[in-house]
Image (tube, rainbow, N blue to C red):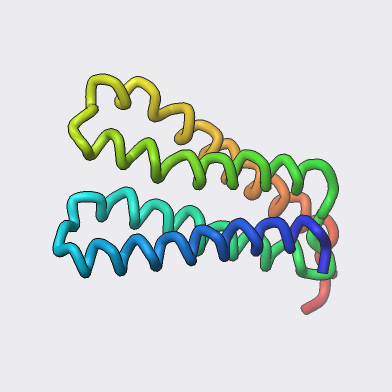
Amino acid sequence: MPRVSLAFFTVAALCGVVGMGWGSWMGASQDHTMMPAHAHLNLLGWVTLSIMGGFYALPRAPVGRLAWANFVFSAFGALAMAPMLMRLLDGHEKQMGPLMPIAEVPAIIGMLLFLTNIALSWRRAPAVA
């Protein structure tokens, strides 16, 4: 498995563990005010990064600099989004609202890089099958 896949899976698993712990804490405390931030961590962190890691493990997937750029932007976006949303949901809308693009833009760039790598894979795909 390429190292970029392992990097994606490592960060995804960390996000998954933190997300599960966070969900357990919300359930035990009956305080679900941070549910949107928890959901972003699970979806962007655990699910999206895992899918990207699986893609880069495929035999014909491009695993060069663009894949690593995809990892850096996507992982940063996923890891930054949850704590920023926590502050936003905790009543700091005026402070955090303008700062949210710090997490949003890298997450979007990461997805665009992923799409670019998918498009590049079309050139490597066999014509038959």
